[in-house]
Structures are given as structure tokens and as C-alpha cells.
Amino acid sequence: MLVAGFSAGPLQSNCYLLARVSGGPCVVVDPGEGAAEPLAAALAEHGLTHAALLATHGHPDHIGGAMAASERYGVRLRLHPADADGYEGPWEPLAEGPLTVAGLTVGVLPLPGHTPGSVAFTVETDEGGRLVLTGDTLFAGSIGRTRGSGADLEKSLRTLLTLADDTVVLPGHGPATTLGRERAGNPHLPGAAR
Image (cartoon, rainbow, N blue to C red; front, side):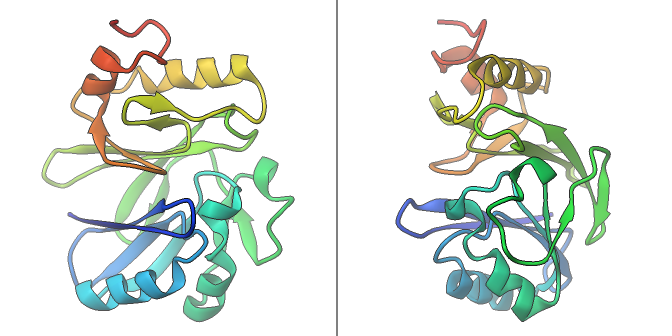
């Protein structure tokens, strides 16, 4: 499986491309502000075609480039309806069940708290690995601030902690980590080792 990513925009938000193989269709997650040119370059570098456009939540640093990507590649943004108010481009509601896109099965985990419509995306690779794209809910060594309910955020973090320790966490900002590393050392996780 191919996983590529880059940071863009004033807040250095992470945008990810997921594909089964180079030269095929891909899923783009969180095309934020400033992502248009790096996205085009990443697609060209890996010979990928744009098959799906997903958002972990509706903040501009994560969807600010989605309208341009929708127009350029002819796909609609898939976004949780609770976060769609601020988005003016074409969109479709995310289903809560798994999506089959670009030859991948992408699970959708509702994680309200950072925003009412925050979600994470889970993917199991053909090689046996596990990925979770957490947006601004969980970072390496930290968690996202809540713009909604602190109780919802805590519940969402507990949901993430049900995933296996070897799950690779691809957050909305900063470096990748694993769920085991965060469970052992992230002081902001409920019930985590201190």
C-alpha cells in the first residue's frame, strides 16, 4: 500500500494520499489551505488518479483546498453533515459504515469533540498493517482542543483506545505515531499510562 503525505498552509496541516499501488486511484484526506500545488505534485510523483476526497472535520486548515480539488479532479468532498455549514463547495455526507473507494475499505469512526462532526478513518493494508487518520482528535503526545464538548472528546478518545497498539496514527498536524506509544506516554489520554 502507498501512503504519502505532506504539510501545507499556515497551520501546517497534514494531507494524506492512500492507494493500493502507485499508478492507480487514490483517496485524498484533508486537502486544507495551501494544499493545491503539493497535492498536484504528489499525484504526479506517484502516478495517482484522484478517486475520493475525504475530510476528518470541517476546519479551513483541513478543507480549505477541497473546493479547488473538487473542481480540478471532478469529485465531491465527503464530510460529516455536522461540519458542513462552513463549506461552500460540492459535498456528500459521510456514511458511518465503511466506504469502498480506490480499491480500499475505509472505516469511518465518528469522533465528536474537536468539532461536532469530527471523524477518523481506519484502513487495513494488504500487508497486514493498520492505519487510523485522526484529524485533530489525537496527535503525537497531545490531543486536539475541543470546540464542542469536552465529554464528547473524552468519549471519542476512549473509542480510539479500543484500536490495536500497532495501529499507525496519522494525525492532522505533526508526526505519525502509534496507538501503543500514545497509550503509554500521552498524558492527555483518558486512562493512559502516566
